[in-house]
Length: 305
Image (cartoon, rainbow, N blue to C red):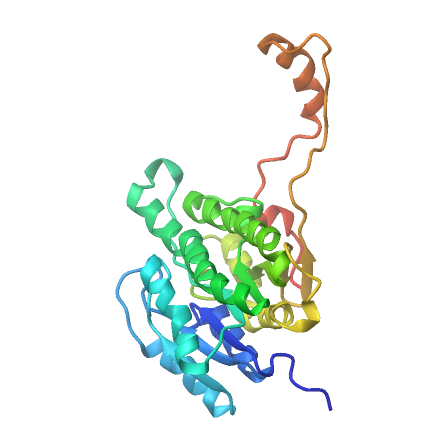
């Protein structure tokens, strides 16, 4: 009988008090990992705090025979993120996996977005992913092993309305992950991203006031958060030792591998370029290859399978 995929490993899962983070924490524990359940218990927009969500996740894990402890520090500040990683060392003596899942939403159309809306979302998603990863990197380097997994989104990879802050943070996370993968490869440290699809608190604010919107929400509800956990557990395991710097998507029973931006067309002008020549030559050459102003729902236009 083969041993559990994460036996002997210690994982920190941020935002593990509910939704996708909870399901990942539960499956990591079931796969043999000892888990730090990090969650501040804030509202969807980041206000308030409660230990109850983390306690509920801990109870689920322990009822199934797993091992977990709670941490309620915020990912959004350098010092508190250090405490999150330190809690793994304090409770379990090591750290092997960082699962950056914590997030908030402040959705608003761009011309009405405030500096506070921007800063709050960037602080949790992008800064938080950096802070926790950086805190773990010192330990990963010393032990010459470790896995980091970051939650991105098709809102950043493709686009969406009213989410400039969230989209910018989520696309930034993919660049952060690639940089970690490049810089830490010599220490056998891996870094990958998952763009999940699921009905959870983070998607419950999607409008459903028209028949078309309701139909879209009904499809999303089919995609339960637990469907995203297997890929996270795989990426955290030694079975994925050759996988780093990649961006995956998980959608019900589908798994996607996303591309990274690469040149798609080129033009050359021996005499150099002027603004007028850009309009005369470059624009017609490039026009057929322009990326459309599409959204995630336009690209993933088929029903979840």
